[in-house]
Length: 144
Image 1 (tube, rainbow, N blue to C red):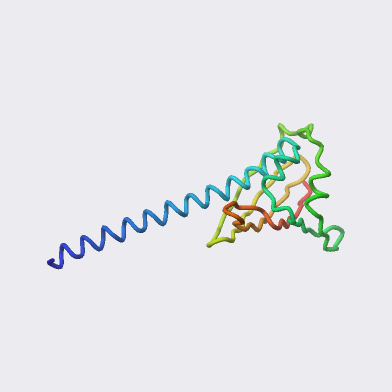
Image 2: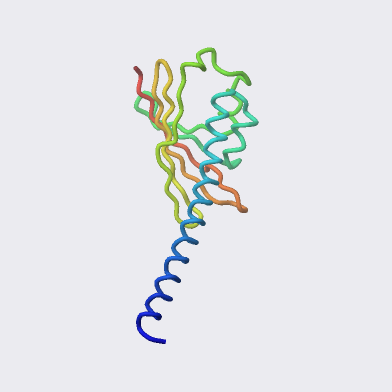
């Protein structure tokens, strides 16, 4: 094989491998975003069953309240949901701002823009039994 053909074959193989890697990356990012969408849909509907799809059962929610670190269990979080959309649901916006992952770990940043407060959530996710689940949520609230 001459050098030009060898280069062309190697270049083609490299391109195919890159395309395959991007396809796998896109699939994983899509799966992570689906988990995050369950979280957003849970907020929009107030339905704890929808919200639970996003979380691993032992997940924790951590935040600072009145200068003190606080931890809330998933059970407590889901138990506080009304099962109904908020009365001001039409005024609320939610966005996935960032997703990053490697192997079986991921992080995401989400913004919940509500009439009186903007929540910024940072999620830690693990791929467990083939599914992405939120295992930890930390958040900050900015009052408007």
